Image (tube, rainbow, N blue to C red; front, top):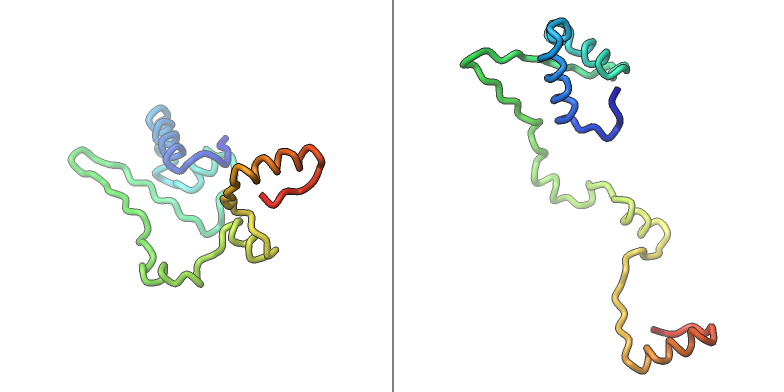
Length: 124
């Protein structure tokens, strides 16, 4: 029922909308959240995943905090960070994929145009 580009916020919004429209779904979501979400998505959820559903009451508000941030000192250890695809390609093949600026003078630009016509390589 969902695709891989659906964000968590979009999914939660859809679950809340369904629970507002369907009292039986709301009850299943409160009684067995993991089974209700799996049914809603039409797929099995990972074995170690836990889902908690809380129902706000008038005058009682729930604030959900994200997981704590990692230790900032650990973030400063650049050797511990994984390489992105570009960095990996740079160290893996020894070639650079990053664009670099070239400066051509007027003479080199004219020479490049005439060399291009004669299929010769230019240094610019």
